[in-house]
Image 1 (spheres, rainbow, N blue to C red):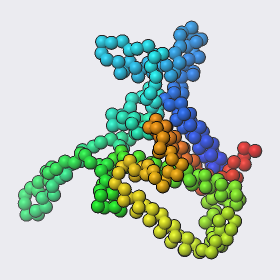
Image 2 (cartoon, rainbow, N blue to C red; image 1 turned 45 degrees about the horizontal axis):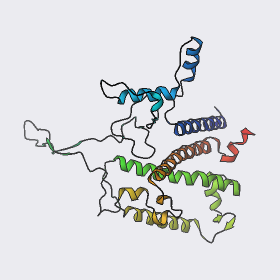
Image 3 (tube, helix red, strand yellow; image 1 turned 45 degrees about the vertical axis):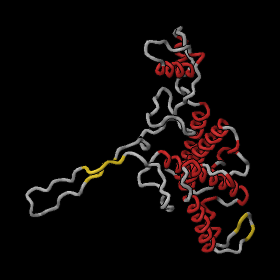
Image 4 (cartoon, rainbow, N blue to C red; image 1 turned 120 degrees about the vertical axis):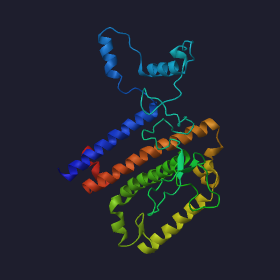
Amino acid sequence: MNTQLIGKISLGCTVGLSAILVCMLAFGSTNLGAAAPAKMSQRMGMKTVSPMKRNVFVNAAKKAPSGKAAPPTSRIKNTDPLWLPNTERPAWLDGSMPGDRGFDPLGLSKPAEYLQFDVDQLDQNAAVNKAGRVIGKFSGGIDQVDTENTLSPYSDIFGLKRFRECELIHGRWAMLATLGAIVAELSTGVPWDQAGKVELDGARYLNFNLPFTISQLTLLEVLLVGGAEIYRNTETDLEKRLYPGGAFDPLGFTDKTPEQTQRLREAEIKHGRLAMVAAFGCGVQAYTTGEGLIDNLSFLN
């Protein structure tokens, strides 16, 4: 199959997936597949219930105490939208974190108990070598930060807080990368995946020559980014590791009410997730078609 055709198909899939994610994130746990059954029920003369009301009614019935009828659906607000309609939230995801829609099909953030075993017996002269027995257990403190080890403050075990920190940082980088690729290509005409080749002839920024070589720029980037990471890892407060505030919040978004702050944090994680999907799509397009972002959209004209 032609690689350009594969690139166009991947572009269409990326755009379609992004549209579906936007709808699911914007409207919460809407029942996307309820339109066809509703029309069929109307033809049969049956009374239909809107998808949102049906979701609310199901959630209310689950939460209603035994022996008591659930309150009317018109009085209940669906305050717990999930990533997939008519699903149950995992017990380890309580919905308190921004953007938590109960999505963890692989159970990566599920709390687990880890066992420590003794060394097996390795006596070649013995008739039987017994296996090591359990000598300890470890079940808590996964998300605690080591105040002494600043280069690797977390333990080797990933917890929910560490997953959120990685997701948020990757989302922020993806938002910068996606926007930067589009702006750079529109302003210079050079595709983002070809920018490195152009830099080999001389460093340029916004069509202005820079008095640096590629080696100097690489060393400068390593020092700046590495210094920023070392400085970030000196923070032991898990909340400030995600949202440091202060000089990193020049517009004062953290000075708002808790409700407004929660909405802003949720908007950030949603945009970050969409940006990660977009950045992945940009890479697939560049690999399969060998064209830039703007050239891949030329078929829309």
